[in-house]
Amino acid sequence: MLIATWNVNSIRTRLLQVIDWINHVNPDILCLQETKVMDDSFPFEPFKKLGYSVEVFGQKSYNGVAIISKVKANNIKKGFYHFNEFDQNNEISLDQKRLISADINGIKIINVYVPNGSSLESDKFEYKINWLNCLASFLDEQEKKGELICLMGDFNIAPSDLDIHDPKKYEGGIMASDIERNALNNVLKERLIDSFRIFEKNTGHWSWWDYRNNAYELNKGWRIDHIYISKELSSKLKSCVIDSTPRGDLRPSDHAPVMIDINLSDINVDFFDDEDDFFEI
Image 1 (cartoon, rainbow, N blue to C red):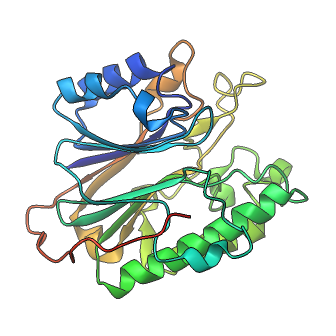
Image 2 (cartoon, rainbow, N blue to C red):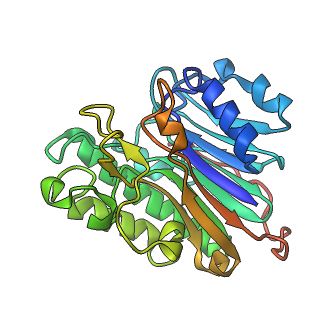
């Protein structure tokens, strides 16, 4: 089964490119970030015509996430749920649509768009770290249920210097700071593993190139889009690749799709609990 993630930087602007990519690659599940559209304005029909169901959690002009799947998603959750206590000090505002999750083929699919953080001195950076801490607590709850997890999306963090074209230049800066990397490691807690690093140990592989300064043409990129899976799934993983081809299109997203191929033939799909009440954050 092919599972992919892609920050499309506006689904309406990039719709034809996304549909063309789907026709070429034929993913079973595609998680999108930065859809930048309200739910009732999302372009559902082109995906439905291709045989996909679509679940969305969006907002106008900013953020927004979606799960597009050949297999109908169950137990759809939008935002962090069971964590209303995190909103006591308005730490995680209700208006930023950054997480959607669903149960598909025996796996908890969690699609995230992690805040960028702007700069280490910014209030947005504090928000980013708080958001990641909330994600860690959210995953703690999933782990207690014994669920198999596939966590993916735009994390706006390069996990190591191998994931930056010029690590010395950006050392300690936004998306490369120890604070962010430690927060990401707290999310993963060694329970989730980086699918890409199972197959590729070297540098030089990027999923995002800045629009400025001919970054794509000069291959000056970062690897900030990731697919993390439960350790129990690692033996079923066949591949993980970054498809940089769409970044060369006219008016592309600044991100490239990342996808895994995983064998789910022997996974038990009957272990999920019934839907629970939830709170959005």
